[in-house]
Amino acid sequence: MSYDDVEIEDMEWNEELKSFTYPCPCGDLFQITKDELKMGEEIARCPSCSLYITVIYNMEDFSDQKSKTNIEPAKQQPVAVA
Amino acid sequence: MEAKERVDDTEEKEVWSWGAGTEGQLGTGKLQDEHIPQLLPILSSLSLLSCGGAHVIALTPGKLVLTWGRGTSGQLGHGNLVNSLEPKPVDLLNNYNITHVSAGWNHSGFVSESGHLYTCGDGSFGQLGLGDYRSQNCPIKVSCFAFRHVEQIACGMRHSLALLKGEHGDQVYGFGSGKRGQLGTSNEKIKSISLPQSVSGLEEVNVSSISANGDHSAALSADGHLYTWGRGFGGTPDVSCPNRVISPFSFTQATLGWNHALVLTDEGEVLMLGGSHHGVHNNPQKENLANQNGVVMTWGWGEHGQLGLGCTSDHTSPQVVRLGENIAHKHMTSKVYCGSGFTFVVRTQRGKRY
Image 1: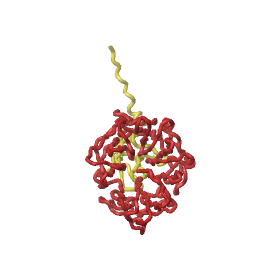
Image 2: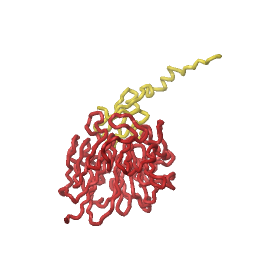
Image 3: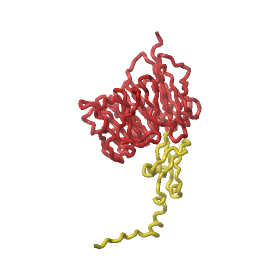
Image 4: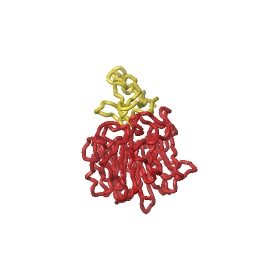
């Protein structure tokens, strides 16, 4: 069973591990990569023990942003006219 | 948990460590887990110890500060970002007469006899109290307490608490991450603060000790009341101001784990708050217990051998830990210090004469 639910904004980006990390009670770090998040993975595992956490995030935030902006240009807000 | 201790020449001390050891935190000179207690002859004269995420801070009777274990955030205060397999002195603190220390997840706090606070390590949540979000690899004086008297420091995962004594009474300050209410400084949601702020609701309380771990905070009053704030235990809601634990007991000691608190009553009983997290392990964070005869007992999560029972099993009830051949007796006392997945015990033996 998942040890904890952790929001992605509470995880830290670790450049060396190329992963988002969060402290594990064993002293190591729960880890999840951007690619895993892109694929919808929500479990971040600890390489040193059996514990894992559930990452709370919005999958759209990790989808390929380039293609997204190409397909969907920013919508203009309608201007209210008095 | 830390406690000040009188140094007595007639006492003989043993320091033991076990559990997770792959960052050098056991002080054994090896990078491996140990499932049975290891005697550390090099550390025979410690007066105070604090265990963090994967590093340890120790005070010698001569008030030297030693650190070892994970150093990748600068938490060892050695002026670098490397792990240390063996205890090494924090030279910068040599002349400050350090009397109290605390090891957090990846940061460290040191209090001098004159009441100054020094911090180092990970500062990315403001937990060093230096007014910024930078990390430090050497201890830096927390300047906003320069004219105050700091008595104790408690470092959690991403926050810190400081206990100040003075003519205006006791005051507890919080700094670092406040997302779960662990700073106790305001009822409003605080993401983080890098300058210490006063904890509200403890103004009239005579605080004898403070504790921080994970996103939890606690203070124990001289009259035996426990106050907790921060992340709720066992799925209870977070609390952003100190909340007195309603109990018929009077408490003499309190310590926090990753997801629970242990308190000792004045009748010598141990009580636990929280601890049956998600039902995976009955006590997911290992906890230890020492009784009057110096017997050490452990229970909870055992995956890294942190229970010291020679195995990696979890235990839901307290088990006696065997510390060498020397059998516990009434002239022994043991002090237990738990880090993340590892354990230290300082066992003191007084003269055997009756």
